Amino acid sequence: MSASVITIEIRGHEPAAVKAAEQISALFLSSGPGRPRRRPGEDDVVVQVHADVSRSPREGGYAEPCL
Image (cartoon, rainbow, N blue to C red; front, side):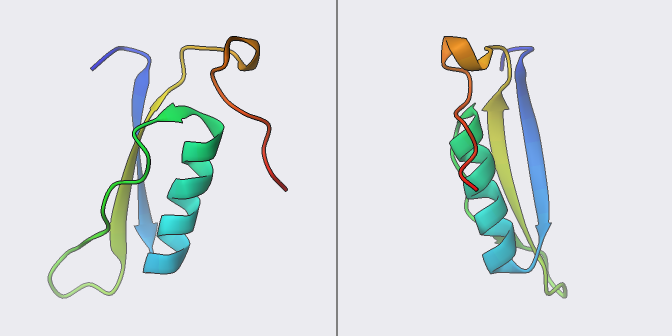
């Protein structure tokens, strides 16, 4: 993995965690949201996104946020 690729791990209630991962994926060049993983005995899930933060917006590095 490149030095400009970061891993973002989101923990929380499944619909909220997936939505947050989708929003991050829309902003940066990314892997897209990973599959939600649930740890035994926990209610929350973990969703990972690998995002490339090396490029600026003008270089197509990320899009304008949709508010």
